[in-house]
Amino acid sequence: MSEQSVTGATSRPRRLVVLGGGVTGLAAAHRALELAREQRVALEVELLEASPRLGGAIWTDRVDAYPVVEGGPDMFITDKPWALALAERLGLGDKLLSTNTMNRRSLVLRDGLPVEVPEGFTLMAPTKVVPMVKTPLLSWAGKARMAADLVLPRRADDPKEDESIASFVRRRFGQEVLDRLVQPLVGGIYTGDPERLSLRATLPRFLEMEREHRSVALAGLKKGRAESSGISGARYGLFVSPKGGMGTFITRLVERVKAGAKVRLSTSAERLEVLAEGHRIHLASGEAIDADAVIVALPAFAAAGLLEGASRRLADELVGISYASTAVVVSGHALADVKHALDAFGLVIPHVERRKILAVSFASRKLADRAPHGSVQLRTFVGGAMQPELYELSDARIEGIVLDELHAILGVDGTPDFVRVMRHHRAMPQYLVGHLERVARIEEATRALPGLALAGSAYRGVGVPDCVRSAELAAEAVALGASASSRRTG
Ligand SMILES: Cc1cc2nc3c(=O)[nH]c(=O)nc-3n(C[C@H](O)[C@H](O)[C@H](O)COP(=O)(O)OP(=O)(O)OC[C@H]3O[C@@H](n4cnc5c(N)ncnc54)[C@H](O)[C@@H]3O)c2cc1C
View 1 (tube, rainbow, N blue to C red):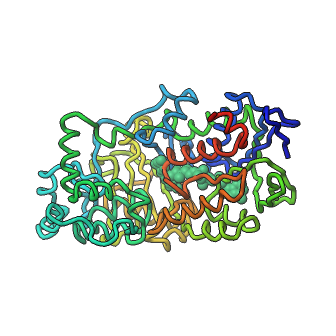
View 2: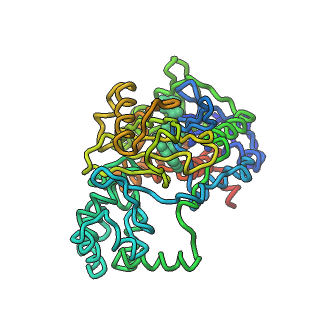
């Protein structure tokens, strides 16, 4: 292992190994190289990726006349600044496309028909009164129960105790708002079951609204007034995608990482051994690699297998983070073959509607350059935590189901220009009730293994900006070692 003197001089460069070549692993390697350059520390970085390609869940392709086809994430939010800041450092600042200004609305299915989500309704809270009163999505009894939030007291039991999203919504707004609005909207993001998802870990701002204002609706309406007086903009405007799609972000990141680090594909890390100084990583091939520091940017279940021998306690906690699988079916259609006007960014489907798809994103309505003139690109989500059995079907069955559902719900006919089924096996971590307490225990157990850091979507946020942040924090914690960190902060 490297012998570092008090002056920071080393007998050989420090070695950092990053495990996982998704956006998290790449961003961690990138930040480590940046730090080494800034602080003039000799650092060898090696990134190991089990599959033959980099990018993990991010997958962008061109299919015939459709220039940008996203199989995974298609944009990222900018009010969490970390992905935006990285994109700017990668020279992509002037190549970020905002979502289209037309059609900024979402639809939700009601009795088989797409209906507009009431204007100003943000996942759980209304920000405008009139659209809530007028919406055909809720019965009058449902609206009256929702309005009861205005007079209901704060949560009576221990407010520190975690609560599911469903319990919170039922308590504040009633079952109908949960079934008809919150479940499909939240399901569209986390592909999760609101009965099991932790409010505090997934949507803490609504908990804060209750704590600060008692009534969540009142807090939302105040926010709505602030927004319509121009203090802040609509949430749709906060999303961006690099021109050419999310793959451009990965390509640029890979170029930078490869300029300073060794990147090995089809290289699976199996086991981590803690040495007297540093770590030894045993690969599936039988080879072993020694490192002063290791960043584990793998899904939690893969990290658990890797770390079993190093810390049973840590592995047990990691394996407790559950995952959902989802298939994204991307298809291209002539607009003339679609009866619905597609005058929105997408459609979410409540579980109570008993359909076989979770949501449809109208990709070419959201972002420019996603479809040739006269055509439309759709991305349909199948499976998730609520319908895991559908993910188990063959690609051909999933494709058939999606085309049938698109026909029944949106009037999509004819032969599609193309259809691609992209599978994301155990790719969506589910932050279940008690998640943040588990993450705190994981962080504590990790601190007992110096030179090791965990990063990725499993812990404190699933979005690309959260992944970038956790990657950069991990690099800052271990890449240069304790003496370099103290020089940095001192
Ligand atoms: C369908 C879908 C849509 C999404 N949409 C959005 C969106 O629009 N906006 C947004 O912000 N976020 C979105 N997300 C979330 C976001 O894309 C992910 O959370 C993020 O890309 C995860 O990156 P990661 O690097 O942590 O994990 P991954 O991308 O899963 O990468 C982990 C990598 O580790 C590798 N690996 C696994 N085991 C080993 C091993 N033993 N050794 C070496 N390598 C290994 C894997 O092959 C993989 O490449 C979406 C996610 C999905 C699945």
